[in-house]
Image (cartoon, rainbow, N blue to C red; front, side, top):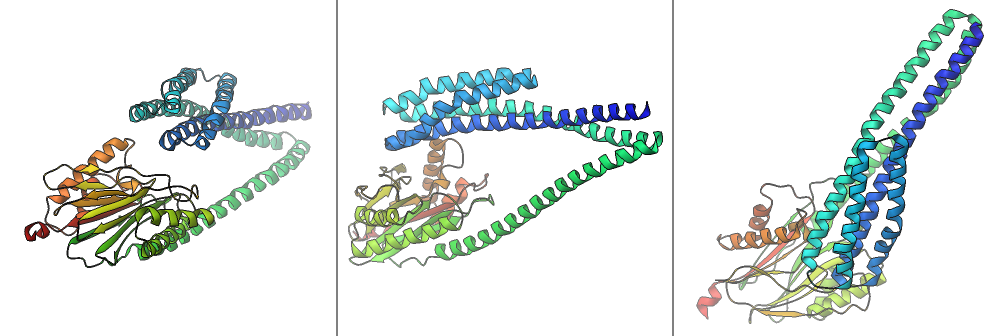
Length: 453
């Protein structure tokens, strides 16, 4: 009878432990499905925004993939919630489905089929996607709470195993011996799990050490690249600043350059490499050298970018945004060409700061991309500001970021300082952290030219 009771009790305890682990695995799978659902929505949004910006059909591949896969994820999440009986998360799932439907009809279709009202549509789309994020987070939170309960049950099951072992030892030596064998097997399994956990911990430590090494190397390279000696041009005051991201995971590839050219001209260049890490820093240095080399051969901004783009495409470089500009210190003409980069800012005496025209595709996308040179006739006292997207994308609203940048430029112009770039940076980031690398380069035409003229 004792042996029979021990066998029955062992089967019961085993069923409890097995059920606990199965429940934990089911919850983990459900959370993976929720993450996949959110990823598909973000892929759709990114693809549509990319297509709306450059009107290239290749950007829509992720959009069509998301449209095909997202209903499957909705069904999987719904099935998971029904299996786990998480009724509190069902309204959030329904709202997410409805939000996706609204985003498709109110944002995606209009952005794909027309070029009108693009900014309003993108802002409305961002609001809907944020709502989708909240719904996904609500579902995941409900699953996380259920996971905590399941883990508690698993712990109780482990305690139950210990209690059963003690009772078995007291009841009968033979039963204790048999149970000891079972415990030995369980110990082997736990040891394998412990060894696997230790291996994962060591791997994490090694990855962290590798990351820290990479960051140190990248920081040294970035510092070396950013320590530029500006040309001494009496007609133009140059200033610049570079701030790395405050987040450790972001080692970016932002840069700027200023170089004096023959015939009273000055080259200004600024750029940003897509991605992070040493690869981004290496790509940044290659792009810098190509732009400087191109300007020495033919100082036409569009040809400088075209030359750099051809070489970067051939080298399979990461995508890079950049602006190449030429200042004629005699005529005060500012000419520039942009490759997918935020537009320059122009501030003239007596006028408000304004954004200039955008450019073409980024560097490294298509070898035959054509770039256009824009020419602006400035006046003494005017200020040109080049910057990377970290200066305006510190919040989710790019329009607000651009407005803050223009106000910061106007504030810098009111201060008699040769560090206009630092003033702009400090004005924007007074009460916020630098989330992404920020590079700012300014050129101010001497007001003394106005008086001498």
